[in-house]
Length: 436
Ligand code: FAD
Ligand code: PYC
Image (cartoon, rainbow, N blue to C red; front, side):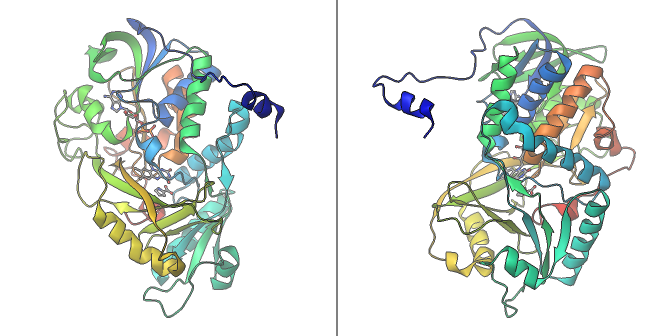
């Protein structure tokens, strides 16, 4: 047992320690304001300070640190995407994830388990082969495995050929991993705050201030703040915030921004080609470790991994309607149970411990939106749908570079908002975790 733990345990009186330095008072002006203290906003703040020496930064959140989608996600990390742009991008994230615990001196429980995407049809197998070829070409470890291979990689999986949708094979992606989501958010928050970044919780941005096409500040529930640069990193509420930056000024092509978000938004119609839908997940009671790899079935619309605590973390497709409510439903659980039991019949008696929902901001091509906007000094990090946790380190690092230099680096340039106007979409639907 570490000596520090014994020393901590012996004295009767223990003072609770908050490792996050206090943010102090909100100043009237900052160099950079980041809206959203989820993993993405916090990571961007950290890399702005660490890599670019920019520390006059306020991260504002209407709720609490890491309490949005970051707290609600199922933490699957992988780079087995379909487009070369996607594979390169997520692969850099995996490299960064591997070093985070050491960098923070804070264990984020990063655990590479391997990731299996099951194929139940010939068409699905074809997509797996395609993904494997693109991945290998770019140095990413993905292979199609047959039933014998699957039986070795995941012995508890039901491979009975008599099933209604029998498993035919799978894409095996060795680097597939999970991590502790709140540890990632807190790790970035503490490391950023130690470098001088201020994190102000319960501070909602209610307006974006602009002058002659340039951002000049933000209006908040605690008053106005002047600043030269704003980064929006609000995931599920991206269209609402972008609308505050001014009507179509967010850059969406005419006709591509599909609908006004519920409740409007100060700037009116959404400038982003994004629809927001709930995404639900649940965990079971803890079980002895039996499931090493992460298992996903795109055709059956379910996925599962076993956490360090032994809980099975499970999810399904997005809800089939647009909604800004984080409620969970019985229909979700019912829809999950049947396919999950087809894959692991012995789980029939296992109890679900809790369930929840988050908000997925879905783009038409299932790729994110990162980079500049037509409002000068206003930068966007959005469109993370169901896939953004795994991008936290790389997006934070590359968006920090974008904010610091005023230019998007080559790695994220293909994800620019203007791709929708230029018909340069990056189709990643075939690599989405389940059929969303
Ligand atoms: P968030 O963590 O949502 O942070 C945004 C913050 O902005 C919030 O804290 C919010 O309070 C704040 N905010 C919003 N509006 C304002 C405002 N006006 N003023 C101030 N603050 C504001 N991704 C994966 O890669 N792998 C997965 O396995 C995975 N599973 C998922 C499962 C579920 C059930 C859900 C819902 C999502 C999943 N995702 C997954 C997606 C992932 O959770 C998100 O893409 C990611 O967390 C986005 O991080 P973020 O920091 O951008 O956003
Ligand atoms: O991006 O791999 C993923 C994922 C799994 C569940 C939700 N998203």
